[in-house]
Amino acid sequence: MNKKNDKQVFRKCVLLKKTFDKNELIKITYVKSSNKVYVDLKNKYKGKSIYFHIDKLKEIQIENIVKIVNKKFKVLINDDELDILKELFK
Image 1 (tube, rainbow, N blue to C red):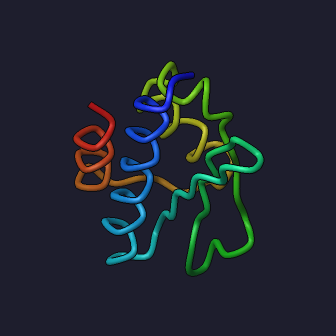
Image 2 (image 1 turned 90 degrees about the horizontal axis):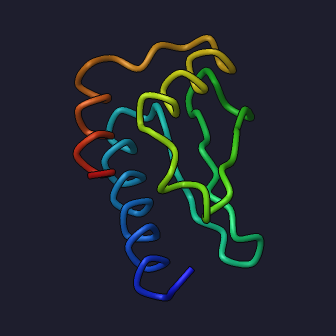
């Protein structure tokens, strides 16, 4: 993966973290050393997380991320949050 794409994905992760810190549902972090993107649920879902390998992140449809989060954590992402996710991953 080239550096430009790497930077783009990282920027989206940072944006997403900032956006979701407001309602404290989801935090997304890019860990360069392991080359993975971690999706953490906050508040009452503390301590639960899933990760995506950075090279596969752009191939993962946002709806699939939502399905994975919904299934794994049994928490629904509301429409407003889904709109923010879609916007950031365009």
